[in-house]
Image (cartoon, rainbow, N blue to C red; front, side):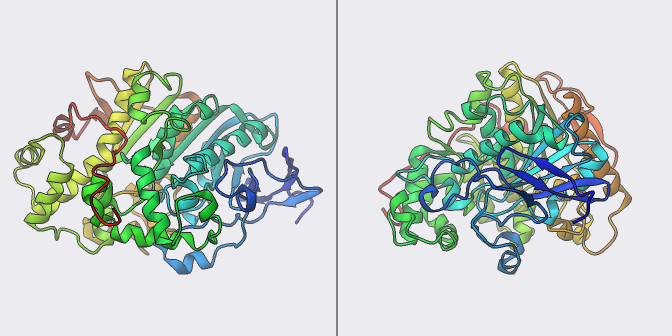
Length: 513
């Protein structure tokens, strides 16, 4: 501690941060009470107040979760404790008069892993280069945050995000931020969360702009979510109720999610397209917390006053085939099964083969899953926003990482190290290795931060808004350029397809019926 360390008073008490590289940085600030004991599986409650000045030097403990891409050793190295609902602030100056734009980051991780203290989400460059206040938040994951269980509100992880945004509204002025210029931004499950927040009544008015990077199309119907929760609870030897699951240590429940995830493909006749994802968690269209699927609600005008940037990467699914050690290894039979499962329409598989006549089985296997899981949900979110009277800007990242001799292309989450400039952390290591990032990557990294900051400040990221006639998007390659949407072939294949909450199919079929 030094006499120049910044101190800010919040509604729950004063916090002391540190000065780092020209910024004031505050870590591990509680925005809600620990969701344990009587608060387990409940909506978030206000943080417990404290006396004196609380040191905000270290990230708060991550919520209980599966190991994820970093492995169990990385989790064991993180702080312990039950104060999971914390946030972090990077600000050029904790001066209430500054009124800088605020960007609030919601991390991804399949709704079952990830945390705001990840080195890949270090926001110093974004805050410093963009002259922004940047906030990163934790939220409940897995069973704690998303399982649809009796006696608990649905979408508790989303309610945690709302609580964090309410904290920003009430407290960010003291950190030099403008509560009237808040932009939420997130990737993958974070982008899916933002799609949900856009149409949630409880989030209305808490942010003015949104950036959704690689929006997943997986939302659960209430019936499907309850059925999945029954299987989850059974893995833990319990019933799917808050009372029953509260008797299980929170740190033991992620094992149930992992066990069920490994067995999910066996539920294909019952859970349909959700089964092969091996992820038993998603936002639930329960009719109360989340009243409708984002695409339908946006088209009806639910967020016409929120300015939106949304986009995806060209080769999203390639990350998952690479992580499984199966790049390019899909057989003709596997590709055929994947096309039958995901291609839209009764003749979707044949249409894909006709549209991509030179594609190998591995390319078709990846292409249709990229399109179903991320590309088309992202484009359609923009189209829904425009149809509902709002404005949207669309991008596609096509620049291929040099990793693995270029075999990864522009895969899922490549935008993370580019946006944050964290080439040596998390997935940045996969995509850039030990080598210095090429100049093209550094230029793209700077472009991302400049565009996102401009959008947070003015609502204009620097390229034309999307419209259904011209379909101009920002194509992010070695030379970023505004051009017609590059995936026109895919877009046409998906015309008329409606993204909606995934249904429960035959509840009497499959394991556990």
